Length: 436
Image (cartoon, rainbow, N blue to C red; front, side):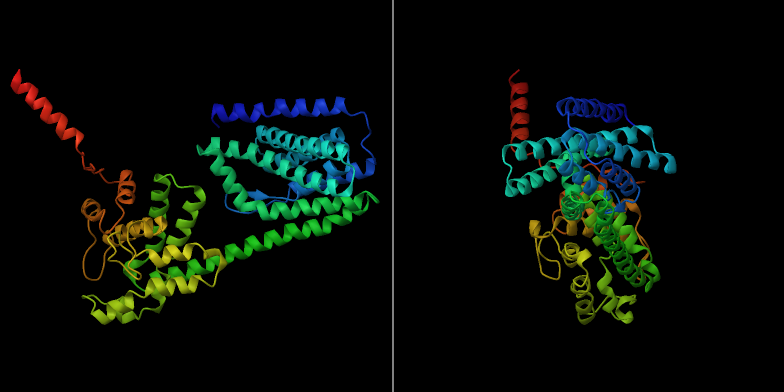
């Protein structure tokens, strides 16, 4: 762990402690029913230990719903203290079970305290000024937003520092991955608070719908993973139909992801490009073996059949919500910058950037692999071919990003137009030399 990240994680502890102390001295009221407090703390600690992977990078659990209920039910100081206690209990259990770093326990507990403090101050401030039911609902909504924003921002900065990325980009990515599920959990937390006011023991019963939201999220993520795995297995079957293209889609996906990261695209777009590249040739499942395995040049009729595979692939993917955005990349991966590609004859920036990236990775793997009609080209020759085609067949910036750190290949110097200024300066220099 880098020193700056470690310093940030520890620094969050100080404002968390200050917030807890200020709220504690600023409120003399008791925490209310001790049984309710105990139940909520235990439930929060247990929920922390059962997260669901929303994406390969982010996970969610039901603890925010319980923490939000504490903020609504209890005075500010006890609520913040109990949220911290629940987080500490849950994170401590994770530390014992998985031997996590203690600094993670400290940071996660502190960011929960700060998020709860922000929510508590906003909720109590609004309800103190306006005591009607409408104001209470608005105050609860504002508190939920504050709790989510503070928690996401603190975690997002830590992730950005760890991965050397833009914090705003990371926070946006987190929100895109988990916002709907988190909103559902906050609604469940609101209902938990409303019901627990009259009978604290019903708080335990309310964990049933909260667990239902969590289970639904888990099932949704599992179904998504199974769907992606099934579609990728279909793509692998297409590759296996031809021994020359075995592992082709995997290789294209790896190169496309590498290039997308080199271009500095947001991680969400990188993952979309990798997902699409993995199945870019899925439509070849409809191409007859006689055409797919033909060793000589394709006839016009055979090439017309081959050119249908982007459309066929996009049609197959249209049936799966997971590929809602990716199908456009699959449809466009044989388009050319000069407009002479297929199936729609798109040109320039009308071709999605992800499709332009996949096109370069696809061409590279095709050139550097054996085919029935020729042996694989050497990496140097294949790269020179990509360079010759940049700006006409392939996007020039994509080719250059692809070539910039290509493993095992000598980098090629990119010749760029020097414009008007440089020749003028050289001419003036030459004139000055003659006059002297």
